[in-house]
Length: 241
Ligand code: FPP
View 1 (tube, rainbow, N blue to C red):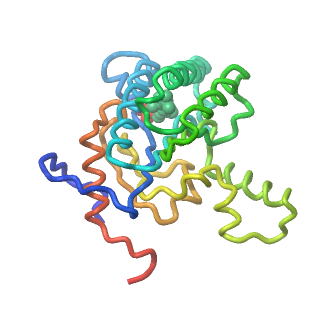
View 2: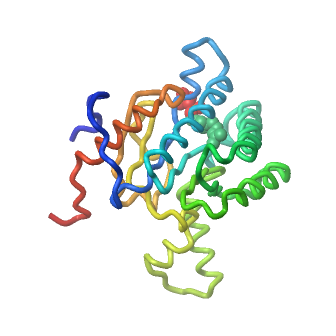
View 3: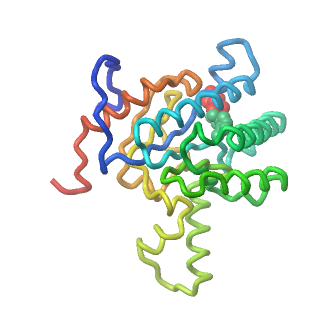
């Protein structure tokens, strides 16, 4: 099965319909992008954050109702302290950026993951950012200290605390972090690796996957359009014929 599809930038991008309302990104390749330029990895994350904004704006313009990005995984704490600190600082800066220029994003920010180990300053800023654009119909989910397995544990514990001894799929869908935006229709992974890396394990059940060698800081709105074209070239059968 072809995982990659050739780029065809002159092709028309179909308008989105109800089948394609939520796109998710595994933003991989920042470190390699920086290394190619002889720069520290943090430089790549900085470039990646700029691209995050451009891609969010483009997704809003295309009409996506939800965008989910994997910004920091439960496993990313294993990185050297200076890189973890740089990522947290960058996040803080982007929260300021969002708070100041929230109209550009045309969306509401929702932070998904276990935010409890984050610094109080960062958590306060997150809470402030989440209050902005509260009535926007569009959501940008930012996954921080997120892991799909940890999310399942959190979901089951939430349901147990409600007193449930058996659970249904609907129960789980109601308590996963993305309950407001639903499941992604497509998951895009940049950076060339063909794996899910503990991202949206529950929600990915019927997602289309789109893998590209392009490193995250090189991703362009045209690449998103290409992913949209690929989505509409695929047949989704949900187990049927
Ligand atoms: C993976 O690339 C990327 C990350 C762990 C961080 C992603 C963060 C950003 C794009 C910027 C901040 C985000 C927001 C929401 C403002 P990698 O470092 O593993 O790259 P590599 O595979 O080349 O080493």
